[in-house]
Amino acid sequence: MKRLFTLLGIVVVLLSGVVIVSFWSRSPASSNDTQVRPGVPIYTYRIVKTYPHDKTAFTQGLVFENGYLYEGTGLHGHSTLRKVELETGRVVKNINLKTRYFGEGITIFGNRIIQLTYMSRVGLVYDKSSFSLLKTFPYPAEGWGITHDGKRLIASDGTSNLHFLDPETFKEMRTVAVHDHRGAIMGLNELEFVRGEIFANIWQEDRIARIDPETGRIRGWIELQGLLRPSDIVGDVDVLNGIAYDSANHRLFVTGKLWPKLFEIELIRRE
Image (cartoon, rainbow, N blue to C red; front, side):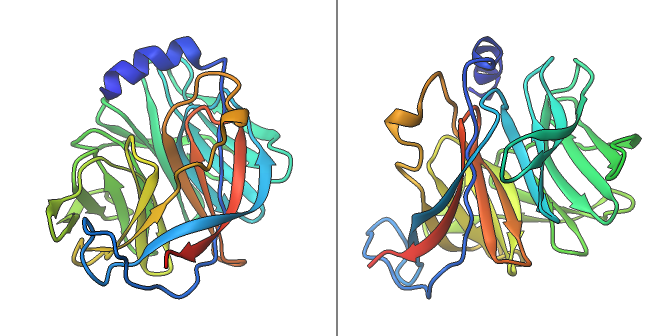
């Protein structure tokens, strides 16, 4: 299915847009949802602010640092790494990936930006300031999302597994299977490390999993249905994807592929 979206996305990439969300959660509570383990909190959201975004961006990775968004986009022939003004959505720095690469998730580690590719089994390492390509490294799986906890890179491959990598050698240190009381949670996509938890988009679902990084157990769910209203859909849009966190101001940003807006939200406990 993801390969199908690759082909379809090339057709529609000039027609659509992106979204983002910011966050400060209220105290958690148990959910009455019978499909969720008792005691696992469920959150909905309140939109705090809406920002413009390039609606042709097939968003695969998102990071916030020092007032700017850093974004990785996908599709063969359209994949980029870019730096974006949050308030205006203006792209202030941009490079195109080689056409053989389908860009995926990104993360900033120190003065480097690390970007995965989809099926090439290659990761790309850039200088954060200049966007100069410093090196490549082998990634022995499909590249989907990537983040870090300050010491280890954490990457997804579209399955239920998270791979913890050494940030210098890129060698795998451990693997964690993400699960709830019913079993494995498949389709882990874009990732962000937020206050001791891994936040993960679930591919083709309008929700984010909150994951214990040591055990892989689901700590909570963020339900984002209805974030992009019908009036916002001016062309073809793709799935919810992309999470970035402003740790200085406790804001969370989330996005979707080919979405035309970028949102700031507050998380609200479902009663």
